[in-house]
Amino acid sequence: MTTHSLTLKVEKLQLAKIARHIFLCCDQSNPKCCAKEAGLEAWHFLKDRLAELGLGEAGIYRSKVNCLRVCQAGPIAVVYPEGVWYHSCTPAVLERIIQEHLIHGKPVNEFLLFEK
Image: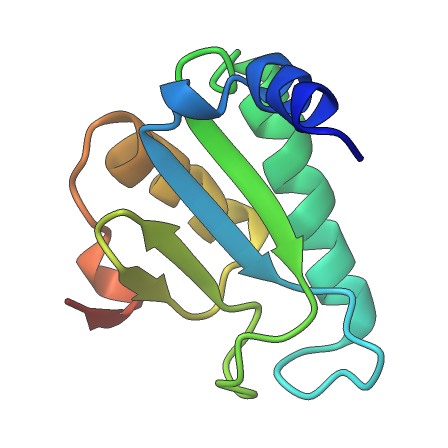
């Protein structure tokens, strides 16, 4: 990969616009924090809902990760740059995280696992 192609990729992904980034623990090879189906349901909800709301263009990104190492009360999510961790991230909980934290900047205390 050349420096030019890497620069083009960064521009295409609009990485400079990222305001918040949510990482969701799901689709593990060896599920521990929740059933694989529950993790995938949460991921598809998050991906579809952020797209539906056009939040990628607003600087809210998402990434699916294999494991965030908490391994209980999942799916687990973490939102950066704040470093706020959440447990029990079902679609209903993710909707609250989207509305309250990702859009309005206020963590959802009811599902807070850890906050920097």
